[in-house]
Amino acid sequence: MGSSLRSPLEQQFLRRNNNRENLDRFIPNRSAMDFDFAHYMLTDGRKHTENPSQISPSRLAYRKLLADALNLNRTRILAFKNKSETPIHSIPKLSAPIAKPPRHIPQMILDAPGILDDYYLNLLDWGSTNVLAIALGRSVYLWDASNGSSSELVTLDEEDGPVTSVSWSPDGHHIAVGLNNSHVQLWDSTAFRQIRTLSGGHTQRVGSLAWNNHILTTGGMDGKIVNNDVRVRSHIVETYRGHWQEVCGLKWSGSGQQLASGGNDNLLYIWDRSMASSNTRTRWLHCLEDHTSAVKALAWCPFQRNLLASGGGVGDGCIKFWNTHTGACLNSINTGSQVCALLWNKHERELLSSHGLTQNQLTLWKYPSMVKITELTGHASRVLFMAQSPDGCTVASAAGDEALRFWNVFGPPEVAKPARKANPVPFAHVSFIR
Image (cartoon, rainbow, N blue to C red; front, side, top):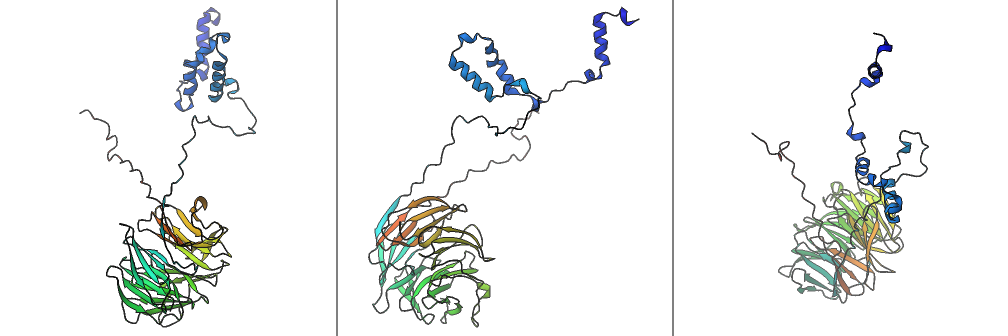
């Protein structure tokens, strides 16, 4: 039958069958669908048929903003366009994120009459049994933070004093007391009894102390560093020689393998225990000369191995961070004032520093950005000494203004949200029909 005898409907049907493009089945792709636009057209989109004269101006403005936000200008779909000169911004949020409230840092103040205003000494330490020791002139006092009671441990004779350093042993029951006469006394804080005197290691005052288990390390004005084994009669087991002026900062690393020492010679030394020898002069691992003033403030990082923070005196004012494995200086921040002491937050990545003139403040830093979180003021003199409570939350600071201040600067650690338990079996939350 010829094509002229077919009806127009039959001819249109055959043309569709002869076109191969019409033989494919249309399978929708959900990822390519615009459900926002579809929902808009099924709801508010139909309202556009209303008479514009009957719609309030505010309603029209709202619809225009909504259409722009949903990209309802469909006239340029699949059309070429030049690269946008300005970035395309997403839909603005309806409300700004809630800012973290500023940290409230309460404080308590105790009197500390007679404390020496001497940058090179270390007169404050907080033991593991929550007892704070402070040296006031020729006396050492103990303050029990658990009940607020205080007691006098010892008052030295004039020829022996003043006290130049104090340091608690790891067990929190024994305390080392460095003296101006070059000796070191060991005391039982529970029995209020002197155990022994360490002598012969130094020829001048002992201004810095650091414990490493049963080893008590002492630093003197004579520039020597001595390791003393307190268990044996002949207590001197190693001597470190490198500083040529007073050793004013001593800190063992958490592993007990490395010792950091700072001196009035502007030098910072890193000593490795494995290199120590009682028979020969011990050689340092690193001699770091970047500071331009005395180095007293030292603090080992509790969450990163081989990371040490050091602070320089009034002519330096910098906090420096060191990789003690390589000896590289990782960062340096100029604080603008004398750095007297440094303490790491045990729970968060934060560092607290205490300073001298002109503000005599404590500064809390965020690590590693070293952005200032807050500054704590109140002392009328340079804040020479800081000590941290055993739980890591509270910091005690002492200054030449004869005030002992307690700051709840670090606070309790943030409680991590418990991780959601994974289902041991796929679809375990689905009820099965047997």
